[in-house]
Image 1 (cartoon, rainbow, N blue to C red):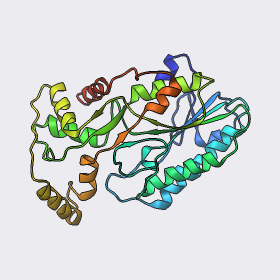
Image 2: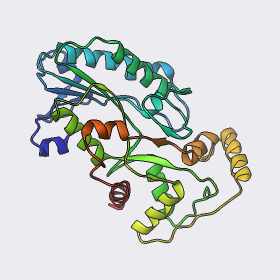
Image 3: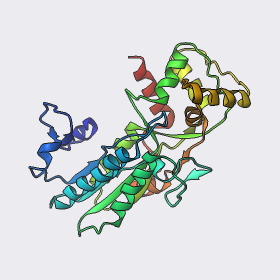
Image 4: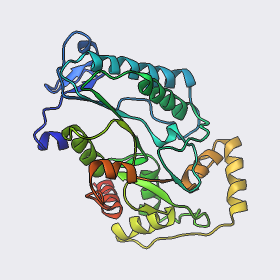
Length: 293
């Protein structure tokens, strides 16, 4: 929101919370007034649960049914020309071999990904009136100041001087800086020639978890501690964690060690840029430094 405002956009947020801010409209009030916006950006949803405990009905209600309601508001808005829906790469692949592209579609084995895929299918099945376009963004792991989740957890491990015990697992992962994301949103809204479609979005370069641990250590002035325990031992401990509900279980081990590479070529062609403005390394360093505050 702040980035778009700095670029001269007037931004109206919609929130379920009762926030006393002039730029925030309550969910209840949305149904009673006309927004008259040039673009609608739908990013509300229920995120995936890293513990693996997920209620399918709740995901469907939030990620699919809510999307239907918001999209219909967009269709009723005679001024609006662009609808941007925040989906996820997890809508098409729980895990990836090689590099994930927009035309790929693999098995989705969790309610989060399934609900996002269902929302995409609904949107793509709708006939767009003349003058309106639909852009579905599938970001990979988004990070930025205040980021929570596995990146923050990894930072705490390094910051406390603890060794990273999973160094035997080599992987490559795509990340997405919040700066590159908001840059893309601004360009999509501003460019009348940007075509409707589905787009993966990721930083230009990938990082292994071992490289990320090293980057965190370098950024905060510490020495990285990478322990190469045998994979068989770690996998055995994770299975014990499944039973005893320990911090390391099979689900979390997979998320920490799997490779997940995402192509960003299609969206860069549509944006008419060769590279995103913020490098993957610079964006990650910015996020890491925010954890120190």
